[in-house]
Image (cartoon, rainbow over all chains, first blue to last red):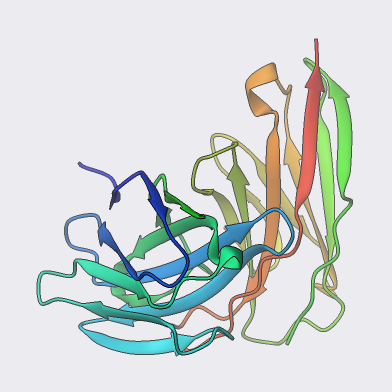
Length: 115
Length: 111
């Protein structure tokens, strides 16, 4: 059974640009959630999608957005990049939209560097 | 919203049992306790989840006292490959429940 796939694994962008990250969940999982991890702030929840609907949202500015497609694949977009957006972005999939407070499976992440 | 408190770091020798305690004084009735393990530059990996008493699986045990204000993750006979950060999460099991990761406990296993 294939795990959670995130692409790309590494990305370098310039301040002011925008970026789109992709996450393919485990087959059959309908929930995808996104997290930002930095040395200073640790793991922070961005948002969760279930059946193409955003169900939960963390405390991030509107520059961070996401969507989920009918095949459960999800994309996360960050517009007008700032240096502070440099981080490891992780997505997790779970069955039936139960979030990480149950058995969620994480991808290896996308390392975004903003210069 | 239940906040969790864990030791920032722990050291242990190979072959020993390691117990990591998490405090969650404000745990709600519908909250579960979930533990994740994370290696550098990888996503967290689910270890175990419980609601009360004791839960055991092939990699760990989770002890939860009757008042549920704390929990202890027990790793039997640790090896060098258990060196990682361990996160304790407390929350409900629906998409609408808040998700807060604490700083976790950095476990170093010494040969």
